[in-house]
Image (cartoon, helix red, strand yellow):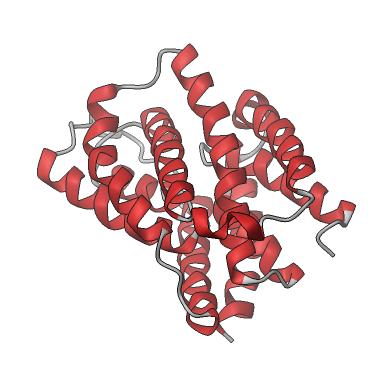
Length: 246
């Protein structure tokens, strides 16, 4: 099953769709692997590796365009890195892992559905810089959860930034891209004991998400409907989350 070209295609499409909305795709990869019947350790390590590559592509593109603000990124990342590494070293029992990841996927589904159904405000207020203490706490909590479950954390950080008006949509995409990169790398280091569980097909999947992530980052946000993309992702995450929880 892990060698199936359908799973490779699924990873490519997930990377494309997530990159189009400023994310790296970890929760989507986990959703696809859950439907394919992966073991927890393989799911976690594989999702982090794929997420790390797509986040690297997104970060490079945002840096090249000059959209990354160090002032907005580093307060979230300064504790996000060590807490992600700590979470990466935590290996939950199989039954508990599936339930926790299922809840994560369901929450991600709600976030994606909210983004698909809600429109932008008519006159958005100018964004404010995130308070240092609040950013530290947010980065730490999301970092630990994302490291434990094998997600990058951006899918949770983005709605917090937007809800608190700590950045515009583009600033949020740039911030979460860097946050995903930092957290995925830290969690993968923390989860090094799971590296032997990485599937033999990983190099092919890395190539697939590189193609999908690049295409999504360059073209998706310009030519594809953000609402439809989020709606489709919400449905995938909902089905997979329910499968894991029940």
